[in-house]
Length: 313
Image (tube, rainbow, N blue to C red; front, side, top):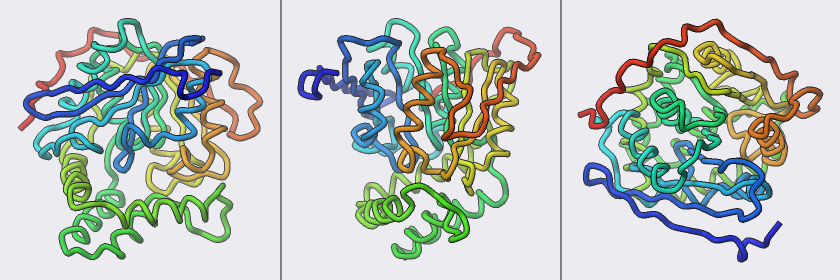
């Protein structure tokens, strides 16, 4: 594999409806499969994929982004729903990827990727959703609302504790890979959030509360993989299975000794699983996950309804 300095990194500044955001492409000149698009969660940004990005660069170019409301992008009011974010993703990919791409989305980003794939199935080669849910349960809604109150009252220490308890399995009776390291890193990142970061968290959380349902209508028709940590307390395996039921051609599995933060707890295993999936290789007999279930729903592959307007005030 070429060294990182030998890879061509390209920045793409963009604007949608007056909101500035950006994309980033690291080109792999010896790519063996379609580019991998990484759509992150609430606390991720385009330069923070670390081991996952490095792992995928062994076989593909990698596309990351700060969509409106993320990272260095402009804040995005909560009245804009996930359809607007899917349009922003589409605008980026229209500039940098002429052929279908592989998509990996985690947590909050799964709603964006699902919406985009639902609207543009011909642009997607394969899609993986990690730590996903089709709607907010009462428990998850209560967790999000509680963290918003803590932010509003400037109770940072309690905010940090609440976020960690919501996303991680902290039971001493359960083994979670690299738990102490992940807790330490996440605690530091949450404590160092700026006022702008907290404002974006506020907006994004309100957006989640208001626009949590996945789009209805015909099933997403691209080959898909739904993954969660076997101990994920936020987007549980049962929630992942529910999303899998909305996909026409789907595989489902859970990663061993992991919770919601699988990309930090077992990055090498996640890269291996997803590289196999994106390359259409066999997923049987992998010791780091439960047996992969292959599900083909007899969903009606009807014409997709017209997408929702991108500006959703």
